Image (tube, rainbow, N blue to C red; front, side):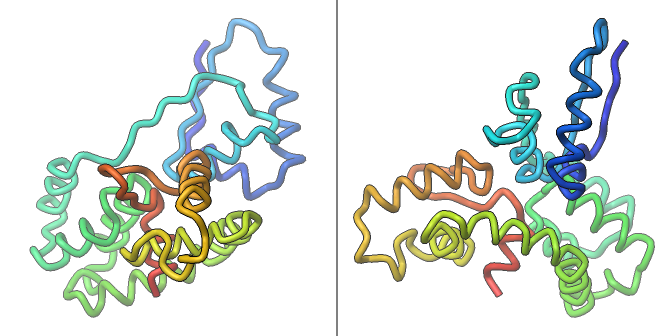
Length: 207
């Protein structure tokens, strides 16, 4: 038997006790294979990569990455979005599976939001407001490691990684970057250049 759970990262919002209970229920099952899927990488990492989590080393982790841009553009055509809005979605949401699919659905259901960039920015601001608790939770967790939020904010704004932290050694900054990458907050796009895995967190920190 194969059991599939979609958006499993949402379990994180229910707290560690619920996650432990879920693990205890699944642990004794035999002849069952589980697939846990989630589009918000940071939440999935907290559940499956964090050493303190009940699901640590529970299974094999497969990173699927972002959506193919050409496939996203095909959906824009079906939804009849104009070029301006299509480009804004690609630029701001970076083909992130959860936010891109949500934006396409929301804008399709509310065409006025897709009329122009002014309306689209209003939509993004509403999305930021809707996800405020989630974003604050991420920031609080990142803030547990000193200067990690400073470095992450620099990356979000396109500034040098050590901007405002020139008094810290190169190795110190490098260790912070390695930690942020390990925790799933950033990914390397080419040598020495990083981007945030969560585009909404990037927008939030850039404001």
